[in-house]
Image (cartoon, rainbow, N blue to C red; front, top):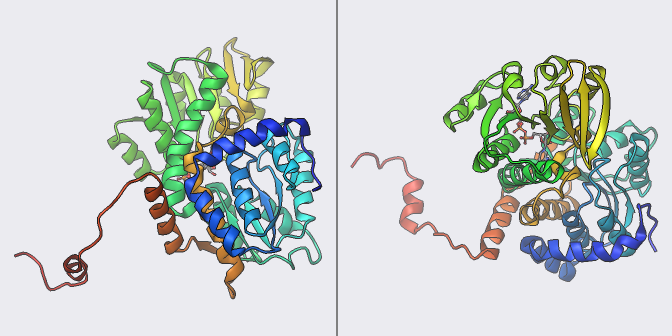
Length: 418
Ligand SMILES: NC(=O)c1ccc[n+]([C@@H]2O[C@H](COP(=O)([O-])OP(=O)(O)OC[C@H]3O[C@@H](n4cnc5c(N)ncnc54)[C@H](O)[C@@H]3O)[C@@H](O)[C@H]2O)c1
């Protein structure tokens, strides 16, 4: 039996059913798992993973285990663990340290428990595992060969580590694969953020002023889906090109201090800090809803919200009502943590199929490749394209192939206007 710490091991039965449901919708990862079963490319490899403990992550863990790996897993957010899934993984023999509602102290205890397994490969979502490992003294890093990173915020942190010479082993930025961010960040976050808002509020989005802070991959997906629900979408940005894109995509763009006055629902997707602050909260309408779908719970300045409030009540699961000095009520969802994972179940399985297919293939690549420098690497192009091809095949979509004439035409410069 593996070592584990989960909320309630008796939830395992439900977790196994949830994992089965996710697995049915992850054909690409299943294909990789079947290859791993045959080829055992990860025999006796210890993998330390800090990922949201969801049913889809469990399918990834099963693929890695099928390849011969031993996996130790903790959550990458104190509020995102699906306790039934954690219990199921523990029962299946995975070293899992995760439960929903961890304190910050619990969270890092779990991260350190994973590191105690001395992983050869790390899988991270937000770079807390890598950061904790690099802060350890002695020879903590000596076993590590490489790692992968799942999200934008983690990649930003790792690039800073690389730039300042702090990064000590190679990491592949899975987030930056086309088959990751174009689908996971955009369609995954778009749909699941709406899911989290609806599960916690049950309110109508049609006709509401829906403010999306940050028009990156997540923000684009969210704005698109909110518009589809009939909301009037307003975008706030700091990047002029992204702001212009939002304008041409048909959204109103304005600074957050103006949006604060008119917004009904606010969602941050910036990966930045203090995007919504006291001065904005004081302008918001009575009843406004504030949520975050970026990686860390710093996008909404919660200490600011506490400081201007005379009290708070929990009205529903993941919905806290703050009474502000001016008498208005503001509603914070999921304590400002990723609303799609804390108040819903994260991205749909079909999307995670591609993100985690990249993860599984990158783990294999790291195990087999030697001589990599301590840098942040892109996902190899052939892995990215393979994931797209397998996904198309799985959903029965055929595409054309270049003819010989087309290939040679694209390779010449002599032929111009005819
Ligand atoms: N909820 C999820 O499941 C999920 C999934 C993927 C990524 N993420 C996280 O979401 C965040 C955004 O990821 P992304 O891939 O969209 O990143 P991105 O870099 O593509 O987009 C972020 C955007 O925010 C803008 N921005 C930065 N500061 C701002 C500010 N003060 N006001 C307004 N806009 C600002 C940037 O200019 C940029 O356009 C990251 O933290 C990422 O890790 C969450």
